[in-house]
Length: 220
Image (cartoon, rainbow, N blue to C red; front, side, top):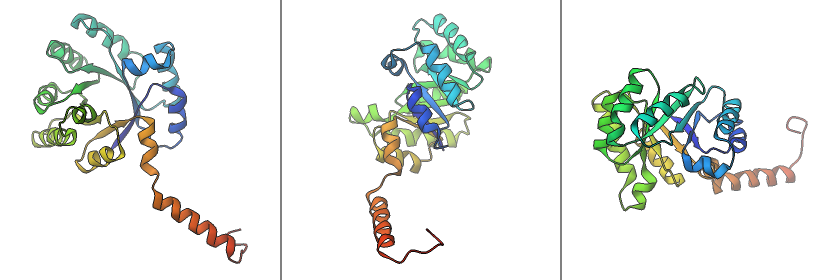
């Protein structure tokens, strides 16, 4: 499973890059706005700290012809760029054209199995199912994501399921269990993955026992 960081904060991304666990990042206009810096500078800094990772960067234009033009510009920023385009009927021809030009595409804001089927048939690289927003609206986001994964497997589509809008550790674990190809999460959720109260209790117990026992040269 690929693990992406849902962030445009290149300083934080640099910290998490040191774990060796980050396969890439996902960036949307809201995340860019929060940084209050030049988007181009942000992308260049992220590429610097994650030179081989996939950078999923979303378009900001709305008219189809402008989305197409901007997508081509974004794709040229780095060899590992994946262009994020919202799931919308008017963008389907644009997505199809970009795929024909071998430009990697991540279709974002997917909320249903039928949406996923359409873009899978186009051969997009990633289908981003926003489970957190589904849960916010009283819909089991993991169930939708699971149905998308089953559809991709059943019909042998090459598109990969990317579970997005993850809010909790439990949603990460649910995504693992359903066999998602990739997940993206904010730094605060990533922090929760490795921490467990029993692990911390074990560390403290071992340290306490060691301090009370006879020391030797083997362990110092």
